[in-house]
Each structure stands twice: as structure tokens, then as C-alpha cells.
Image 1: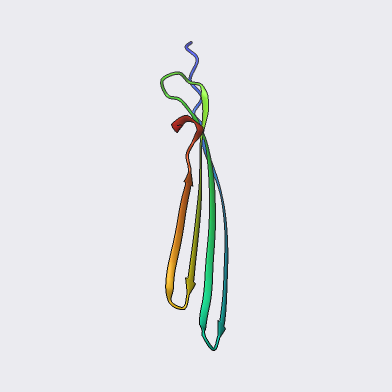
Image 2: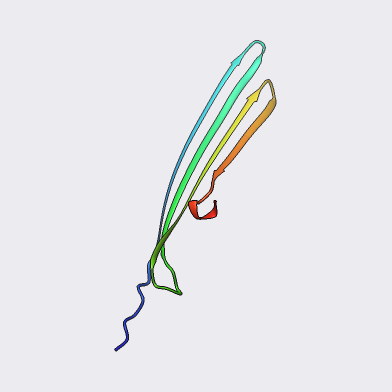
Length: 81
């Protein structure tokens, strides 16, 4: 009887967010920060070996007196570099 390949596909995701704002007589400042980290464990269909994929994203947005500045950063998977 042939051995069957394992069939696993598991994913975990963590997300955190923060928001703050401040207003005074000259205008206002607001900021938003979001962080998302995802790890996925999987089995390579061609070899049957266990592998993983990970991804991290960071987004920061700030508004000062109505002007918006946004920073987006994605950390690549080590296999992509």
C-alpha cells in the first residue's frame, strides 16, 4: 500500500491597530498605525515536504492640519530575497 502524502494547510494571522488624534486652535493631528503578520504552514505538493510562508505589513498614516502622509512597508518572505 503506497504512503499518502500529508495534507496540511494551516494559517495564523496577528493584527494590531492604534489610532490617536489631537485638536487645538491651530488645527489637528491624527495618526493611525496598523501591523499585520501572517504565517502559513503548508505541504509542498510535489515533494511532500513541510514548508512555510510568512508576510508582515506595516502601515502608518498621519494627518497634520488636513495634509496626509502615508507610509506602507511590506517585509518580504526570506525566500523572495
